[in-house]
Length: 109
Image (tube, rainbow, N blue to C red; front, side, top):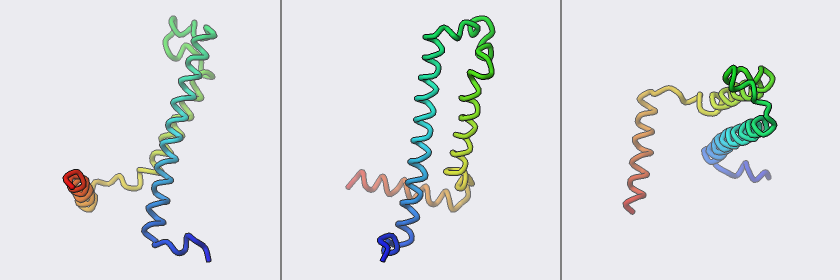
């Protein structure tokens, strides 16, 4: 018998949600690291000489397109992970209040 089928549905759902959130944060971290490295490479190679004269877009479309399109991908990933629960309904308010009260109770225990 499959080990996952023995777990309660809510536990499997929570584990899946944690993996989705973790995946987003890993994606975001890699985005920032790679783009930081890319900017450093451009600075070191003096490929940003046009930057001082023309501003950010003077670097050329090819040099910023990676950051722009990957950024669109990050926003899409964010929406897929967190956008499902974007409504601030009464149900959300009650759930958030309960979450904060639970944290407060754990602090005092």
